[in-house]
Image (cartoon, rainbow over all chains, first blue to last red; front, side, top):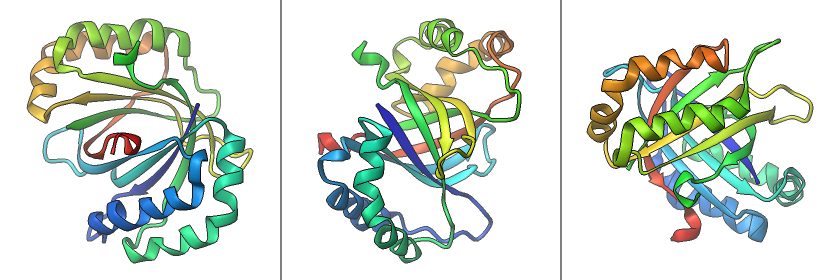
Length: 109
Length: 109
């Protein structure tokens, strides 16, 4: 299984509409990708490691797919539409990290 | 629920022993944190968003806890021991991102 992390770096005065991100943007991705998207997770940045320090990332989502090919064939045809929606909730251009999921959930063994 | 992401930035010639990370380091964290650690996940960086680009992060783990307080009280007393183990698998000093888990798993509704 692979994880495509879409990560929004934090900055002073950043604009990020978490409600839109959760209620509109991720459902759009889910709808367009269909069954190729096994599930997703959403993070809202709270802080860095030391109390009171800013979070490195204001927000992030993680898209779980069976393979990189499954992700690319499902996301690719809709990349323009999905990217075009980003301006509706933030002024940050995200960066991507593609990872192999070594442990998906340690509680599941 | 909160997520403590321990993130190792990538660099040319980076040293990272994924077997040790999975088989020794994370089990150590789990053992020391006990029930306060609900579960963890492990990512192995494969690439950036464009094919052939290096992954921003060589590796990462995400520690899921009920609250920041639960994390701090369980991790804090063992921070020195756990941090001291990092040199056994990598030459990277990680950074931390603490996030609120807005959506834990979209497939669970």
